[in-house]
Image (cartoon, rainbow, N blue to C red; front, side, top):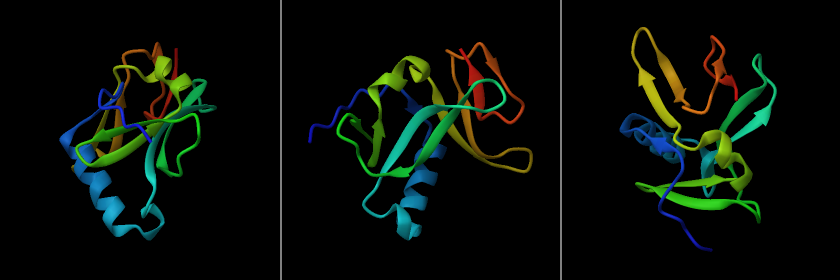
Length: 114
């Protein structure tokens, strides 16, 4: 199993800390990879996928400061250069996505169009 170190998606220190916390506290995340991807749907056409999952044969594997990340290579064109952050403040809480490839985003922040 080859791990690639140059990931097409950037994770902020806040996101890395939260993923590590979830991986250590959530029994269903044990032994899984963090899957970053896209799927059809959402109010603008595509939605982000962010969950713990098993590796599929076609997935690329990345290591981001100890967080094992997997991504379907066909999703890279939609996600290249995207930043995933985690906010834990009063005005904003949860994971956020800054995608330079998105031509349109929705108010919830988890749906986009290219």
